[in-house]
Length: 392
Image 1 (cartoon, rainbow, N blue to C red):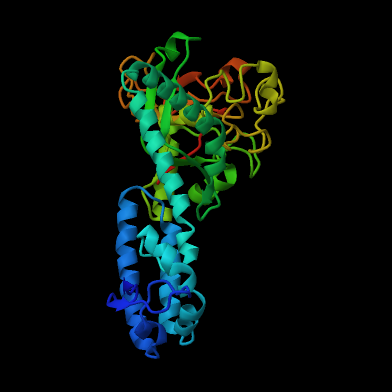
Image 2 (spheres, rainbow, N blue to C red):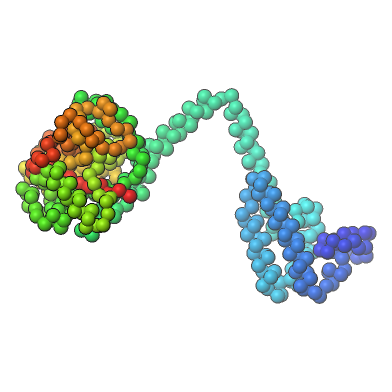
């Protein structure tokens, strides 16, 4: 019988019916020239790689097969005893079946994975058919996508953000928490000066002080302590907006940067809400406020060390109560014409600047996430403090 050798490709006559060596001529089977055999097999490997690349273009997952080929090729080149062994143990078991499949694969260990590839290709084909069946149902399809997007956003706000939040510090020991980029609805319908409720997009993530600035931190930068209540870990207070700007300038100089500033009103409320839409970052119930804030019902008429109450969902402490916090914006009575990109409003109704968060001397209503007041930038009161933003 005339045959074509699977190894060298030459035509030969099979005189050995009765034994199973595949289609291999006597010369190749009996060859002692290991290097020649290596070269022949390397050619087969190259052909196999080309066929694998075609499978990959058709959508097959072939990473594992590529690994098998690479592993075999490495062993072929570096293990002197491997070539005689594969011809003795493997070649009679695999060549006939492999040739029948016309894949060019050398071993049954690879050949056995062909059905898996076929199954995966069938799955891809079925998925394509499913998508084809969606034609003409675009409206329903878009509705489903919208539902999924809303669910993803809800999960992202409630679960993913706290997981990725992290802190960093600076040379004077201030701690900052990473606030992610995102969108939220700013304001509320509880007061005219909190309307209209409007969508704001915070394009870039930023770091916000984990706590209000403390008296220790103020003294490290300014060298004095203007506070009415004295304590290293108490929030600094009785500081005007103008004085805060001096603090920021000196801190930037000390740290060799220009990244420290007051948050905008939008950035502050976004961080305070931490993905929530309720009156407070923990819900709507005033009865729960004492777990998160120092205010007139529980403060005993004074400030308290930062970080003693529960944080909001993004790990920020004292966003409700303890001291009012200056922000960058000038006061305007409502949000008509307010920026929607998270930036500060630098023009308004007079010269006043905005304060947020409530204080030890204020009622529970003043501690709401959306509540806002204003003071002259030169004002300094025992209820006025601040926290800093650090740009990335």
